[in-house]
Amino acid sequence: MMHNKDIKKWIFIILCLFLINCKTHDENKKYSIKQSASENIKLLDSKFQGEFSATVETEETTSGTASITYHFNIKKDVAVLTTTTYHEPIRCNGNYKTIESNDILELYYAGGEENCKSKTAAFEIKKENNKYFIKGLGGEGTINEWIELVKSA
Image 1 (tube, helix red, strand yellow):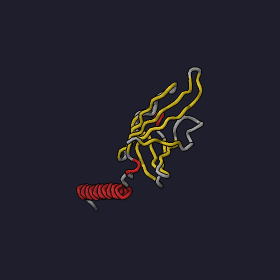
Image 2 (cartoon, one colour):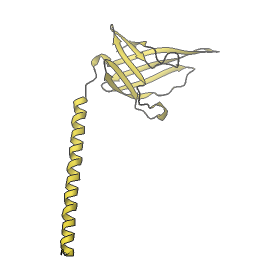
Image 3 (cartoon, helix red, strand yellow):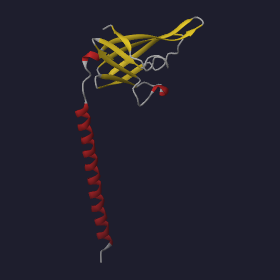
Image 4 (tube, rainbow, N blue to C red):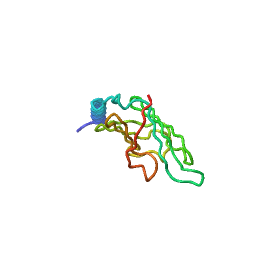
């Protein structure tokens, strides 16, 4: 028959083995995540880096046509959006995370406005025949159209 002391000793040994196993599993998990993340890192193609802008008209108003001018400053894996508007609200300005996929640069909102965050890209940029185009500008009438972007720097 086992004594109380022996039972406590076995419980202690089992707990130690359990903790060591958990820690080792956790470390292996971190390593595999870090390893796979570093394998997937691809530096942003320099063709997408620079300053870009485009203007879209959104709707007619009694005092003129409402419009939004989008200014993107793209460096490495961050794009910064600033907008100027006429009769339109200013929203979703700030930082966007960039991901390049199939020669299209996807921009995901990374700022503080909760209603701007989405699992899908807010904007997509592509380069064709030495011209840049963007999808996601304006309202219902233009949001799914490829609109030419002007690269200024």
